[in-house]
Length: 611
Image (cartoon, rainbow, N blue to C red; front, top):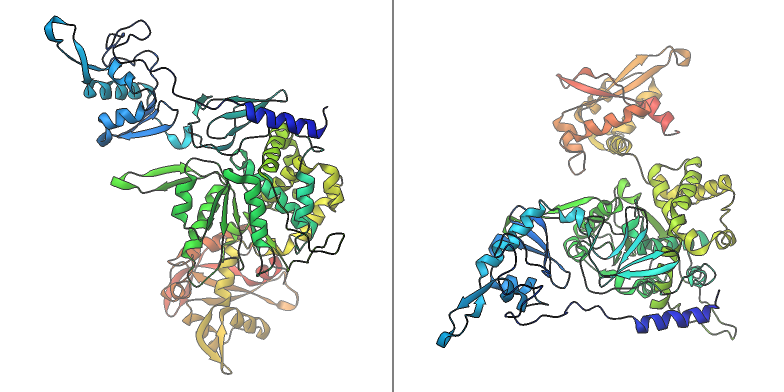
């Protein structure tokens, strides 16, 4: 193997000698024959079939929209109202003479001369292209078109779409091809972004180790473990389109913790392959994402008095985590549809409020004040600088080692499963650590303090380190019940406003349901039933909280939550699997009204919660 410096020179030389992509080619005058046929005289003219060597390729039709790959390999969608000469010129922009050749409009030659082409028969041209698109059948761009970024082919190989070229590694060699169709999927030409390093990159050659050491210089709350999670997140951004689950990163901290410098590292590594935005809206981010599988960096990801802007981004990140379909309205009542396959890097001072299902898709990293690093002479060190070349090498390294990713991911998920982490946590952290393993190798991860070769200790260490973060990810039924128990009601005792949970606690201590306690709960639309239970010592009773499926009083308590309008009933039913909610409903009289209620076993709830 050649030394690293030699291989770097080779890669630079390969970049310098790479031929630029050109779609122009020959475009003889319209009157000139092509493929042995004169103007407008090809088989099937004017619209039974496409002319030979037509530079525009039909993909299919969906409703009033036809889809084509134009003469420079871009994806073009054409609605019924857009057909005309201008659209033909757009589709054939690299071969404009072809339009006049294929669908000529003739005029009689003067003085006995041959007829001459004096324009284009636009109707014939449009009819021909539409018929060819119809022959291809129905076309769904959301499922059959792949923009820029990383993808998997049907064999599980990584494809990198850099806009101008498609890149794969085959037998250790980097291969490039023009955008087009692969396995029935279309990769249209797009503006150029980051390209992989031209030479193979091993762990020994990679800039990964120095980048990881630089990341360790930040003052992470959990030390090198957080640096490793951040590094795995950076690596996963390169290949987010090829992942089944796309973990998102959310570094947070006050001024002076290095968030801006961390963003500079991300920008330096990903360069043009990053959708970079500050103070962005969901619509703006979504429009820039389009059909690309590229990472998104959001600065100023802040909680505030009005969280509507960040809530839209959180919802977009939720869908992108698992590659969900997004439907939005468009102009002329034409819907816009695409599948989001993007990872998000969202930094800010205060993490905005998130639902538990959203927070479980983020690896939240807390940063403390930076420690001033000094060089050998005692002078402050310059902040780390990541070059575009480093990012290209990381991308190539991931492409070279991608065949080992399924094995690494399975190993990490098994270790996390054995440590008791949920399937979502296994997907999130397993992916981050598997990508980090491909880039750093086992030895470097061991040196960072992770016992990679000891799965039992490894899973336990990660479970302990992420316990607080995962504890905030409360199940839906539990969050709903805790909101109910913590709700204050219009009843006071000793000058203090009572909560539903507080009243139940008084009832449990007293052993009986007092009249004023019943009345207090009734104002909130609930009731408590006490039942003798032979399984409990000393004739103790089991207390059941009766929660109606429908109640004006309860709707008021849930008014500003996602469980309003009776949704609380469906949410609480999810607690049946934990034995907290009784499977059989019961009719209970509350405020003289008979209501069908769910029964929440308070003692069982305390047991499940470890109280």
